Length: 330
Image: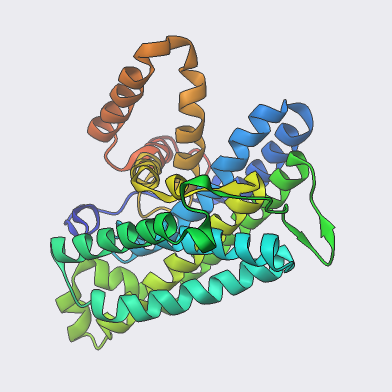
């Protein structure tokens, strides 16, 4: 489906730029180190989940924000990554990093096979097809109990590691997760400003105009879909190794709702918006915990207010401040 947020005649959300944009990786890395070594285990866990979701949403942003398409089924590739890493490491003794890359290959192949016919659809037909993909993988995870353990879940998954060395503490895992997140954002940014990325943005503007310019629209959409699937697979694998346990509910429709909230809250189509959205959405339930039964009401009210008054997300607000004050520019 062509995203209205992208294909409208409105300008894309202003991206964080200038010296502030260049400083963002340093800010994120320093914040992660301070949190890792100065906070309790619970807060480290929350930020760990935020980093994993940041990777997942960065990939989703590549397909929805840069390419202007909609996918409601990226949770399927996160499930593929999570279960592949879990089975290969906990049952067959594979190295976690090897299992992660094998899961990426499997997810890429599945994205190629599924995306080739599916991405020929447009509008709500594409949205429904991708949503069905997520439901199919979810049902497989539930019913194929001999492999996935069904609702009982898959336990005994080792932490992420390489060459026999494992990151056994949550604090060291958080630093590794943030490093992978920064690498993912950097790759996404480089692709966005490449010839490939410019073709995707042309497709987001108008598929007909892009086709008239000689851009192979279906081929580029399929490539973007595969890139998003690889990000989702990595996020699923990292979740399995970070928690040590996965079950079908982890990759259900709730994951779709959360990821969409993060994407639009942070700023769809921007480089750092998905990361900002992932951190805020991960922290909101903890910040509103004192409200008890009113927590969900305030949570939804905040989200609705931001969607109404900041349709371009929080990165749009930063860009507005930069335009008016010149703050953060060279």
